[in-house]
Amino acid sequence: MSDSEPIDPLIEEGFEYLREGRFDKALEVGHKLYVLQHSSAFEIMALAFAAMDRLDDAIAALEDGVGKVPDAWRLWQLLGNCYSNKQRYDASENAYRRALECPDADTDSVYLNLAVVCTRENKHAEASDWLSHVTADELEIVGQATYVWLLNNLEQYAESVATCQRLIAAAEAADADDEDLAPLYAEHAVALWKSQPGSDAARAEAWRAIELDKGAERALWVIRELEGKTSDTTKYFRVLVEGVWMEPFEDGAGIPGFYTSYDVVADTQEEAFELLRRFEPPEVRDSLTISECEVVEDCPGERHGVYRTVGYSFFFPDEES
Image (cartoon, rainbow, N blue to C red; front, side):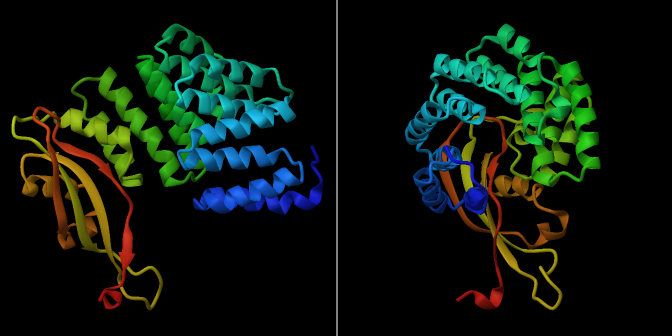
């Protein structure tokens, strides 16, 4: 396969489309790279297919790729990820082991993924063994969050607390993005909750994660568990709320309004609204109103609280019809 310099901008274009969520365009670039016989074609196409929930197509692209470029460790690792997500665990482990045989493989990343697939199989001793080969500090921040998630799943809570504290300090010093840092705070909350029952520290770390990313699922879970409210009359609500943002996006512009939605378990619509209000910045809470509210189902006995939330859809009032 050719690795000639002139097609580097095309490769970057493909990955930029992936970052933007423009997966059809990424596939077009992947096809062009395939015609040019460049190995990045398989990775770009597979990532696009996977993001579109077309895992079988992603696997087909990667199986073609590793057949043509058998020493490309990234393709083997991505193939292992796709197999794992299809619950083809033996095939996944074999793909990761093949990745380790490739020259220049990022072994920390591959060992981490081997630990993940073993955890999914409930092979905790093997998962712990693979994880022992990983140097957490050398992982990208997304991998670091996965690392401490594994420690928590393996009930290694004391090590998780110490690792989270070290990684969070380093990530903050490096000015990591909020959405990348939030999972580390969330896993720190899990570890504190499990290792220090009754401590307020877990609650504080969970809310810190929410401040950085209000949709941080593990933090949502910890908050629900710590609050611990259940009842026999619980319902699952889907609530669309409207509000006014705290400031203009740029000087001279008006202050935008926004919509955002929540899935909340509560007894009443009023309780659901009070529970979700806490997840918005303090400056906008008084502006919130319910735009739509749907009872999805009855769910007696489920923990009260927020289960899911999404980002914002902004608008300027004078643009509304």
